[in-house]
Length: 308
Image (cartoon, rainbow, N blue to C red; front, top):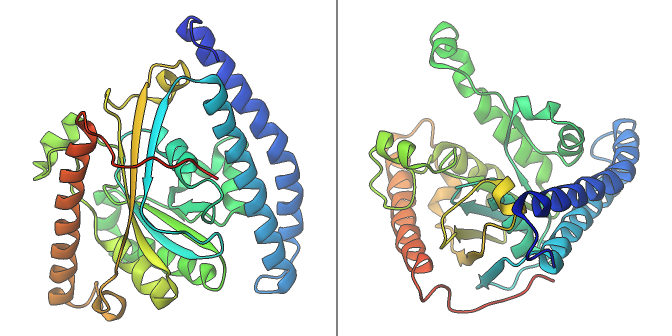
């Protein structure tokens, strides 16, 4: 336990441990990625390499979680409703407040589900150590276009949709958990005010990419997982988290049935389908907002589970 140490020293020790852990696992990961570059896609050896790369990434995350459990005084309550399959296929929607959310998702799911993938801004491919690792893990990289770019070249408007479709097509037939932060950005009071969000604790969800992921993955999905993360003491950045200033986190995971009609419709081309999907998602977000209010209260979550 690092409890009692000055916050900067606490944070420096944790940061060093996470950095060394990343170096340890990224070395064999890069070796496998090199072989992956030389192996034709769609072949049995390529699929075996993908499984091995995912195993290394999950092992890296489990070591990070072990450090947090042994050395940090953060209390994490995890309520997971469904029985998950490490070889299954899941689509995950989650609220987003801080970089700590990703750490907490690793904590919640452990090895009980496939290692998650999420959509990244294209610029993040240049992040030292992790950029190439994300590429090797088949994380889709999305290029954000400004309004000026779209005005000059309207064809760019559908580029992210095509990226979503291509990524989800690659995931068919393999264990995968696709993570969507539907708000599209981290929650702040300023963003909430500027959006005029109808929710108390959430920003407005963005439906388009989520609808395309549902359509692309199709009925192969085992289920949709709705994840809500709450920080009763207030959401903080990753450095305060490493410094031990985040004392309590609550995570709730529930399984949702995906209505059949959302697999078949045309979100881009059918206005009635688009409106119906957006209403369904708005209802889901109102329920999440109420759940989050309860999780931030004294009662918290109803059950606690530990990661495998």
